[in-house]
Length: 405
Image (cartoon, rainbow, N blue to C red; front, side, top):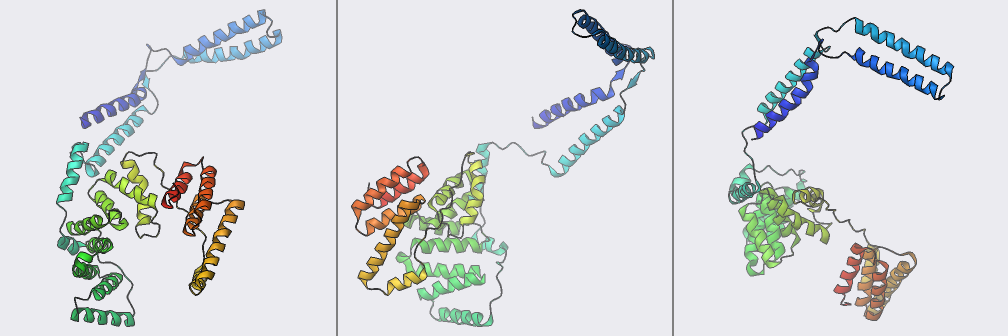
């Protein structure tokens, strides 16, 4: 069917272009000069009518008659010469170019196209994705073909320390802290298989005490060792992390990534879109998610999707202020915190600010035990941002988390 449609459309277009180029002009066809004569005679009659109605002056009528008369003579001479039986100028050459372009297109498609590829309805695409999901390479197979991670060469002192760490872990392999450090440093060196093995041993040692973050890190290292592919082994660790903590961001990111790898970007979109709404700007995968989310939205049929804006960093105490606060007496520290909250409240009342800062003020007042005042600020913020549903959502979330609703 595809070839029939293409052939019919190409024939229609080629015929529409070629016929005017190859058409013969003969005695049976009215020359252009005859058509021009009729037009000029109509113009002469129009001049006479305008003169009778006194629309133009006699002198203007004479000028127009003379000008039109010259055109009549020129058209009459062209008509008296007769019409030759010939094709339009350049018709053969233009037809040859058109034919060459069509043949070149057919040749190019046969070379780089897929003329024998069948149609792929949605059901077959889903079945293909499921087949790829089931037949992924094993971890060992993926590690064999995975490219080596490029890392800058470490200095001699760091290399010596890592060798000491490896020796210590080899002597005491049941030390969880040693395995944790070994996994971290092997990853930094680009030894991803060794890092995965150390993390796997760490999870085994912690047994029932292993956390969702432990399993999520194991899933990430297992995938990295396989060249980025989420193998069955990596997926098992990812699934366990989600069982322990369904909101684990790293594991949820990987659950979306596996959908992309098997050809189901429509399934990945809601997972990654939810991660973006939550923030996670400091996560290593955040840039990848944000750069791909609009393409995923298109595949998922969400043509009007707009990624959430990154919230600006909120002002707060710097490192020196935090260090000074840690050395204060509890009463002095409380006074300093209250002063900072009052300063934030004053600035928002006089200069305004984004909804994130209002939410921060509400939460701070609740922490200080000023619930009534926090409720007043909460009502003021709701009124201020009533016309902005997205900003109002930030305020409502702060009120809910602070127990003001």
